[in-house]
Length: 428
Image 1 (tube, rainbow, N blue to C red):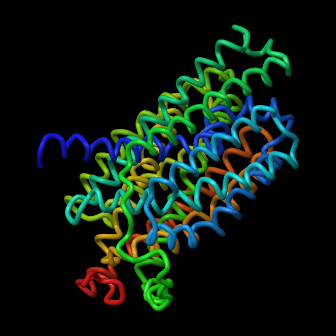
Image 2: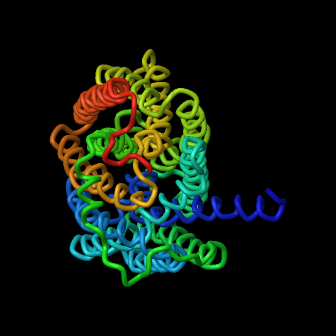
């Protein structure tokens, strides 16, 4: 590959990384890294915020499948740029700190802007970028890069938060917290719009081989729906994504039972987000060396152990190191899972021209935690305030991890028994 082609090759993946994370900064980074301050600024509890955010999941579920079909028929540049810019506009409205009704509508709007025109196109472009033999590396690099962007943006947000709030955070007024959240939200809105500009001028404006007027072949959808490996992969995504959603409550756990202030809790979780870089790359390399399904079994086993520890541990002088170590290990495993669960598409033999459709089907099922996990976890925590609520949440997560491990073991057994990918979806 010539030097100019190599440079362009890496610029494309950088664009996918930057845009692929910044578009989700507004709906997810704010409650993940700044949840205590956000709850105060919006005057909401975990249950109310969870119910509001579940609307995002509902709209996203309605968008995954048609978005997948769209990705198989049209070029990504205009679709991705439009979705990133539209998401940033929603951030400007978020700066007004709307009430529950306005916030609910906004999260529904984000469910469309971040998924319908963007999600499947990004994953399809990543699969094409990786080629036949570098799927683990491609998705590992994507996840690692997105982790770097997430951690970097969150670190900037922590700086803004620390600058606006008083030195003694407990002295912060309601107005102080609202002002801080407006500035942090504005930062994320700006980053989303910058991503739109970068995508517009970087991603090549290629067109799919099929003409835009050609009708979608629903017999190919039936092939995808009949594939057992597609359904198993979707289940794996569900269980892994629940673990990822749980990280959004870590700042609240640190600022509550662990006794940290809001800025320190946000700083800890944002700094630990840098772990996502190495975890995703390493998982991708291991997936290429062994297999994605085998690596997923290992990771779910680790999560089962650490979530069980967190469910049983009581914060104190003698358990502090154990708890923080378990939190860090859980983040490593969750980020690693995100780096490999879509890399299995090549391993399971999903035909390349059906990538968008398969992603749509897997995503509709796999990302249902966007609908149910926030309301469920919020109710669990609010029902038993303090440590008991979080221990109940970690118990739930340990059971989910056990289910994920069992599903991955079954997928590995199924592949070994047939000694080939599902015949219905094999590349020909």
